[in-house]
Amino acid sequence: MTSQPAPAARISIELGDRSYDILIGSGLLGQADAYEGLPASTSALIVTNTTVAPLYLAQLKQALAGRHAQLHEVVLPDGEAFKTWETLNLVFDALLGHGCDRKTVVYALGGGVVGDMTGFAAAAYMRGVPFVQVPTTLLAQVDSSVGGKTAINHPLGKNMIGAFYQPQRVICDLGTLATLPERELSAGLAEIIKYGPIADTAFLDWIEAHMAGLRRREVDLLAHAVRRSCEIKAHVVGVDERESGLRAILNFGHTFGHAIEAGLGYGEWLHGEAVGCGMVMAARLSQRLGLVDAAWVARLTTLIAAAGLPVVAPVLDVADNAGRYLALMRVDKKAEAGEIKFVLIDGPGQATVRGAPDALVREVIDASCAVA
Ligand code: NAD
Ligand code: GLY
Image (tube, rainbow, N blue to C red; front, side):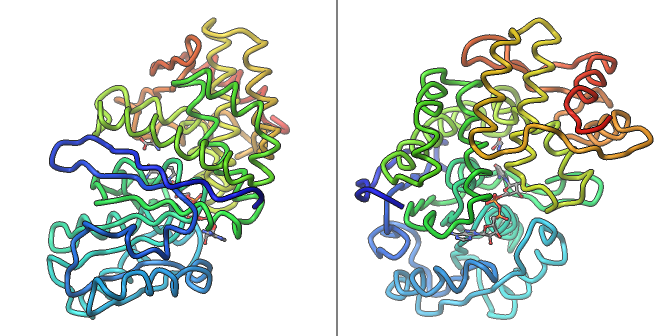
């Protein structure tokens, strides 16, 4: 990472008695005052994984030592392929094994996989215990740690088993991004890019202008990107916490993307990679429906490629590729009575959620895949 640490920013997410703050800054994870005001229960459980534990667990434990007399930890196997019931059970085993009670605070230390599973465990354990998100990937800082969606995967569908359950705070330490592998950084950039087309064209311009610096991990640029992304997400979630309408726009690129993830097998493509390519496919579908022009699709495709993300979709089935995509997309949570709903772009910084004729979707899949 280059340049000086940015000062911490605080964004509030307004949800009545479930409102909370997102803190963004360098070095926050190890600073005791970042946790001030959170419940200081006797016991706490930190949930992390085998990759993140050696990097950041000691710092977090040190910061929390004065808050909880009994500080437990559970270290999960790493990877999207482990976002399962079996892994979730390891968290329950730890909570019960350590005699954790209803006041126990659960901390999620890691990327979106750890965050989503920990949130679900916190929602379910004794019907709900407080939890805190300490996201350590760019993707988790700009998206998954904010807004209270928690889940595990099912072999038949991505994030299909879960709950809405808000954290008590989100603590984004930009310093953790220094150790993130290049491919994971690009995956996070996909979710940052997403906010431009759906909500903020000025932000899209800014991302285009600063892509090289973002990929060099210039901390002031990362700070702005995380802050603006969280501001947009906080607004959308504040309006529509449980996705009865507006919140669906946050799934731009995800309908195609989830099909890629499930179709290839979880973990083959990163979530952000699938979303990046999925945004290209959704943009093409928007164009075929006459909502945007070819120049706009080309612009978005160039930006996604510049982020280091794939823009050619994988073949999921050599015999009936488009059919396989369609079958997987019908399992999407937005689907209604088997009709697939897509998040499409229909104006500058504006998204709409609607169905599309299968024939048109097939054309997009054929045009987007390496070999169709
Ligand atoms: P991830 O959690 O798998 O993390 C990516 C990799 O980076 C992992 O190997 C992890 O161990 C490692 N890692 C984490 N922090 C690191 C660090 N600081 N340095 C080095 N390595 C580090 O993946 P992700 O991209 O963070 O999250 C993807 C998941 O988030 C998917 O399951 C997706 O469905 C979910 N998601 C949820 C929401 C939501 O609203 N809840 C939104 C978007 C995505
Ligand atoms: N990542 C989509 C949402 O939070 O709604």
